[in-house]
Image 1: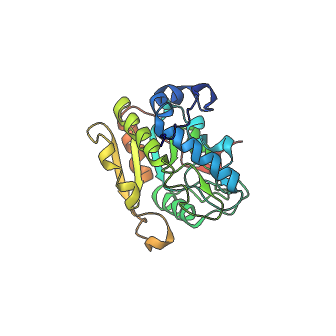
Image 2 (image 1 turned 120 degrees about the vertical axis):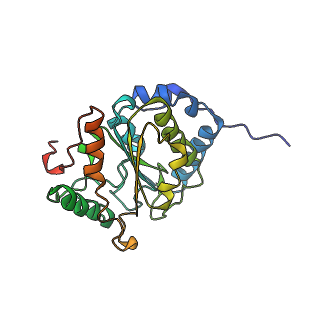
Length: 237
């Protein structure tokens, strides 16, 4: 019986911001990433996949490797139509703001007095250096966690490890148990890790009072970095 040959990934075909392509070159060329590609092609043949192909690496394209100041780790892209845009917790402007994001906005108001915006588009944060990273980068329509076995977690764990190793003084915001499980990947001697319950209503408000947004900016300022303007009302398209 012949062993199945891994699908090869041509680096030139990977549409991702150049600094990330360089940083993650070893991942793209590894056998497991060929497996991800193969599974993704199969999933697209079988049904609808979110986000659209051009937005799978949106977090990386908006926040180059050397610009990352903060990482907010999510789990799975939204699996409803017109929601997922390749940024954790974010939905395009005009789409109803999901409950978890509404709770994030409430905490920002309590923490910093910033009024809740009427859009769920977090591009403004991404452009300031907030890497909005989901643990899985794709999902099947109406099927939560359907691509969790594709190998994306190996890839996104590598993203966290490489940032931890190559960069300094990044703030990692880990909300909920799956995100907290990533702590061993991060060198806490040179980065700040802040943990809290997940902002989902299912956590019954345990997220509130974490004040992660002011704590993030205090740490960035301490390390001579420009703080994040969390006020999405300032976002100009």
